Image (cartoon, rainbow, N blue to C red; front, side, top):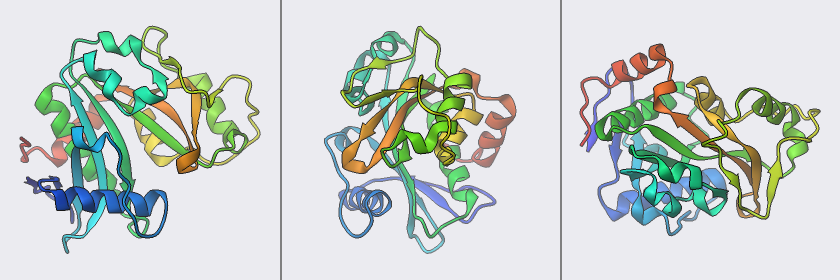
Length: 242
């Protein structure tokens, strides 16, 4: 289904056929690994794949959504490979795992990210989701380069004790005790989550296969600033999404 957003040059729809999913997987590969290939895993089949296209119907961004009616299925999520999500499994409201969020590197228009988030907002409202979560990545595997960013997360953005995941992966890196000397900036996607009231785990996990580190990231919908929520809904208010 295409969602005709007003005042933008982009359209958004969910993948409706295998060719759409393959296009998303190809874009993911270009963004994450470079060159031609297909980024796919066992989680793709259970997810919905959101596609942002430009005026020429070129795919410029994608993100996959794993929707759950409550926390009982959270063990099937991508993040559950790396984090102990037992605390979130008791949530009774719907959740959405957001993953593989990427934008082609030759498009620098901030409207792409805005439109993607507006579409996600529609889906949140459609199913009554109370929580969005996922793994947000830092490029590279050396935590020293992100010392200031990790220190800021530790000081200002740790999740509440009763929901924060425990370590599970062998390649977990506690944020506490890391040097704060590194000055590489925080990833834009993570900054967006934090600006909307999101929080993170107290440790990062190294993903050597993707040459990244990631932190568990969670956004409780009720914590989104009202002005931000109104702006997102205004962008897509005439676009019901099934």
